[in-house]
Length: 281
Image (cartoon, rainbow, N blue to C red; front, side, top):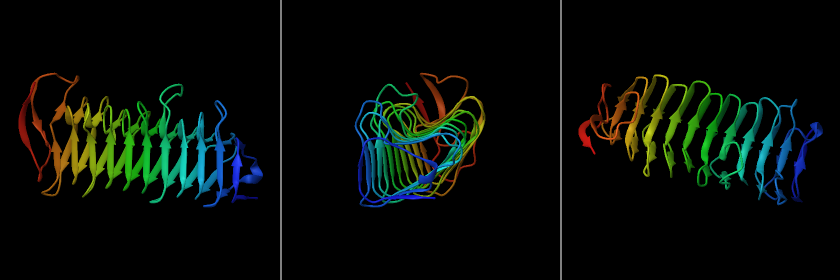
């Protein structure tokens, strides 16, 4: 079975198994405005699939909230909510070049995020994903992969991956308004390709990796207010092409020091791009 929506639906849509897969055309929309109401809810036991070319919006809940393991969202339209997309037990989100996914909330949710996947997940972004205030652009709670050639903006972090190993592949722009550009709490790797930008202009590190050793391959630009890259348990940075740059500094150690001489750009790693020493006060 399947369902296609080509008109406006006002109020919360609770998916039935006969609605799967769900397609929302460019003329279709689902809008929820009641307190705590998600625009689209899918229960457990079904791997839901939603393809959206229209508009999904919740004023006071999630835009899309799917509990079925292995659910997937394909978006070329717009999705917004206090938390925009939440896949509770893993799955994938693909946001195409015309797609926008926006979290508008500030408090009251386990994690405000443009995309939150609480099991292992994969996010492929070619469009725009954002979160306001203290939110995350993308939050993977049990490891996974984020591939970005578009724009991901977070309030707290642009991308956070925790719980298990994470992989970030970036040729677009990832930035944070409050803290770290990207953070890997259980290790993994960051590949910042040619033209890729990872930044934390307000505070924190461009890339923040505590707890477990990890690696960075950089052929673009990584910068942070406090650190270009921060490791607390060891790791490596390889600066590739001549135009590659890790700005501010690379720190390896147990705590973020307030004033030390650190190796900027490269630390111990192989380097073809920018590497310099600075004293930070």
